[in-house]
Structure formats: structure tokens, C-alpha cells
Length: 159
Image (cartoon, rainbow, N blue to C red; front, top):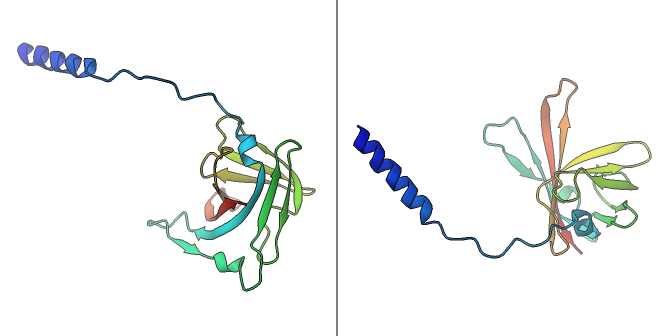
């Protein structure tokens, strides 16, 4: 039994010693607010039932689009921390305009939109950098007992 332990320990040490050495670095940490700056156009809108065992999603993009309809756009100004929404069709979950901020400027997970009468908490689907062409936002609707009953997912592309 003791010999097996020694053999396994020797194997573990030899495998650990064979790891390649990491070269280079990942670069500078960037402020993700700068990545949010600009105009973003809705490309897809889905609704998900978070209580479904298969997490079923339904595409409701047509709720925001149509013939001769400009898709919803959101413009974020990183310098002034202001935003405004242009929408012709569909429900505006974001408010017409206001201010915005991230929960963490280096590694954000939540975007907050503050309009004249409400603050909306939006989950970021991925980090957005100045080179990103897509942004994914999710709004969870929760009933009074704290039970999550629907998730609205917005896929946006940089204009």
C-alpha cells in the first residue's frame, strides 16, 4: 500500500513538472464603460421561462420589428454617463433617457439605468469592450415573493 502511494505521488509530481511555462501577459485591465459607449441596435429579443426544466426560449424579435420600422436603439454616452432610447415599436423596458452606471468598471455583471422615475437592473450577458460588436442584456422579472418568473433577453449590435 505504501509503495502505491509513493508511485502515485511520483506520477503527480512528474505531471505537475511537465506544465508549459506561461509566456506573456493578458494586457492592461480596461474600463468597460468605454466599451459601452456608442449606439446599439436590437438584433434579437427572446423571452425565457427560468422555471422550465429545459429553459425554453421563444423569439419575439418581431415584437420590435416590422416593415419600414427602425429597430430599437440605445445610445450610451460613457463620458456623461447618460443614455437615451429610440423606439418605434414594442415595449420600452429601459426608459426613454437617464443616467447609467456599472456595478464594477473592470469586471461588470450588472448595468443600472436610472430614469426620472425608476432604476432598472440589467444583467450583462458578456463583458463589452471598445472592440465588441455585440452586447447581450437580460432583465429578470421577479414577483413579490422573490420568485423569478420570466427573463427578457436583448441581443444588440454596435451601429
